[in-house]
Image (tube, rainbow, N blue to C red; front, side):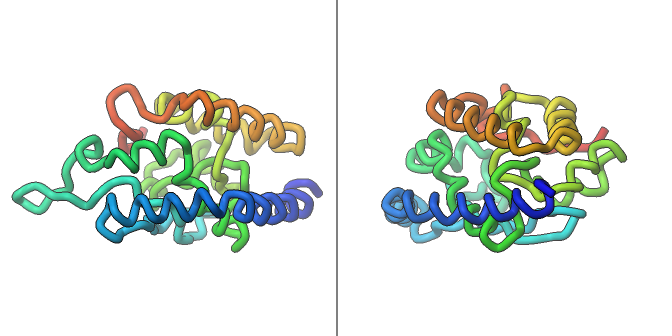
Length: 200
């Protein structure tokens, strides 16, 4: 009952409230990113959702599209602007995903939606992360975020799928607020974001 009925209703209620309360921050972020990214504010990318259904995730664009002489994108750390770094550190880049929650593509709490190209790389256990809607925050995010390696991250995701409850979601939301203020786990040990998953 909670997972199929109550949780989606709570998700939409929270997303609506958050979008209303943070609208001034969203407008300021849009203005800053407009100048930092030369008019390119939004990051849209296809991601797999519940049962692997593909949807387009909406985030603020924190990196430029600068390329080298051969036309290849520069490393993340060279494309991350000062404004983008601040927005990423404060997790403001995640706020537009509340629109995905309102559309029913995502949940407030759940495994983070990863890249479509990862789908054929999962083993059976890792694929179980798609049994629920992906979330803006999740058990992996409050237990290390990008500082976790892939095996640890997937283990957290599957653990959440097996233990989903109202009490757990409230705990994750509380810990998320703490993590945002502490700005922990934003980068992995070797990257400003997270290294690509290349399979098992």
